[in-house]
Image (cartoon, rainbow, N blue to C red; front, side, top):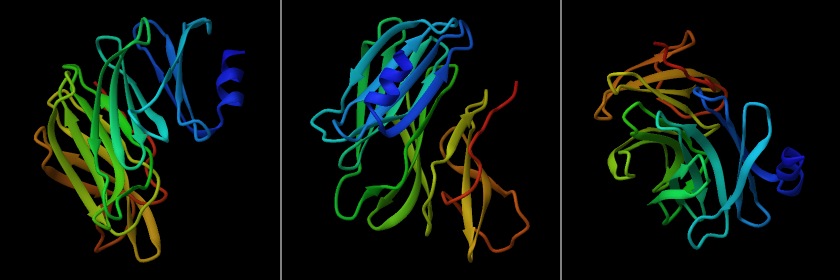
Length: 231
């Protein structure tokens, strides 16, 4: 019934799921385009609901929690789109659902707009990494942003292209290198692409999972939709 409550009463926006590797608890986010709120519910490993909360972006008319991640301290990290073009990152106490901090990064202005929903990751030190595909100054850009464990932005970088599509996925290795699973566009073709950034956000290499030449990596249509770094 809690799932029915979230899915049937609040349709119209993105959903996201995160699972704790330590205790099996899982967190489900559902957003509504009708009232501008997002709901998050926590369930234990047996599927019993522990809490559910309603969240909203400051002064916004639309708010979508579309990225969830459980960090090594069992804190919930949520990445959201806030209208008009504000990227919001929240750290949430996983025991109570209380917000620890909220960080907003404002991309509003001119022709700027969201092209997809953000994805989020947190490393073993609590640093937070967010990626989102935006139109900024009428140019299409796949942004990657690193924040420290207190929500302070450490660096921002982007890949620039000429085609939009679904959101990229992000992961970080033990040395702080960032891996971005995205897509590229060549003529009328789309294919998966993997990009490595170093710990300062500087691109190191890109690999295309296709046989093409003269391509450029950036967020596009069909491509990689999941990314995991092994041990």
